[in-house]
Image 1 (spheres, rainbow, N blue to C red):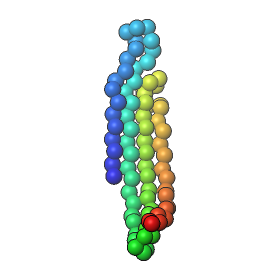
Image 2 (cartoon, rainbow, N blue to C red):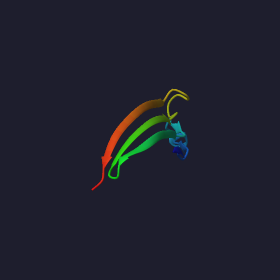
Image 3 (tube, one colour):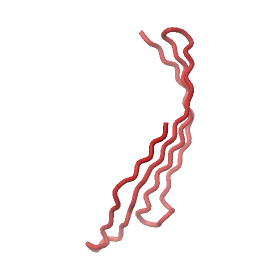
Image 4 (spheres, helix red, strand yellow):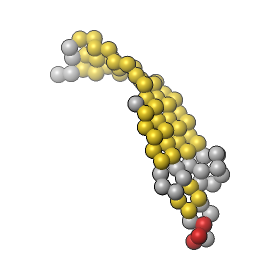
Length: 76
């Protein structure tokens, strides 16, 4: 799965402020599922997320995260 979100531009310098911003986020999730039994599923996923908001200094406000998930699901 791939998600890409781009926010609206924000500029308050015309009202005396100091912020110009154009937030954006990119999220990639890849995974596999394995059906162990009729009601038991094992799921493994990798996620890469990157959020940018250049409100103060262009290129300086980035949050990058990577994570792994391993889950077991039981159905009733």
